[in-house]
Length: 310
Image 1 (cartoon, one colour):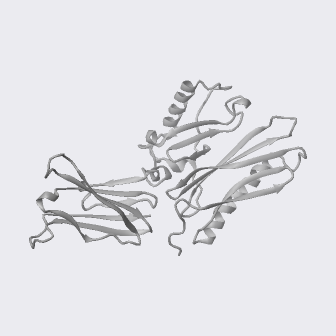
Image 2: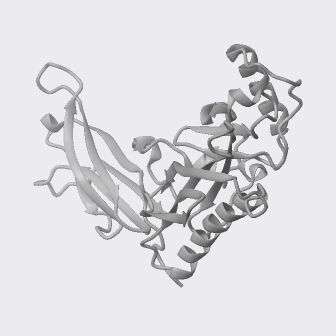
Image 3: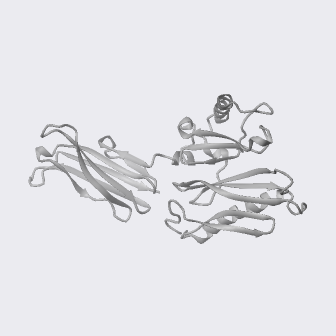
């Protein structure tokens, strides 16, 4: 079994289709410790490119020309969302049209997320999203050529760092000169209906803040998140926070340690901060005690959190 089979963000290289009538660039993942998983993802991207090309009658129409590239919409927290963009046209006679195909991968196993994977099964997520889209249609004054009905359970979408993007095919709801119709929905609007094990929940803020109310808890951290631990202190009393057990340096590395005074007067309380960066996959505790280093008295307080990174 491979461990730490992918990096954050996953390294990407560029592939190019060489053909007199095709100019298409698309990505390939690299740097995986699991070559089978890497190949699985790359083959799916490549197959999608070629299937999209053939579906437009490329072999039957000798005048059809294709130019395309790829937008990397998201590459973090174990999720890769790529948007393949292809322009089809009989150059130079016609304007042609744009077709996009998005793929959102779970980098841990190569699974391609479906729209229904994003939401809790017991929530009427279609109704919620339909309301958001209808509101945006009015706010943006979108020129529909037919009335919007509903998103589907297999709706086309991609993910960005902060939003779900729903898109519709060229000429599906809007005139051809409008381009691809997209609706950007911030994750914050979907937080309560997002599936707890789905990719939307993985898009947590880059910083995870932990404090005294988290004492005794297990904290789940993404490999690209920073951990900020803060605890109240008052050095003027002689008491300081000291490690009982430092985090495993192969999993979590301390980057900074500093104090922030909470008042201007001498002896005012302060807040002590520790900033940690994940460097590996696994679990490690952080244990601190609040005591006087020179005293034999037992500590007046102990703080422990267990950090898991996956």
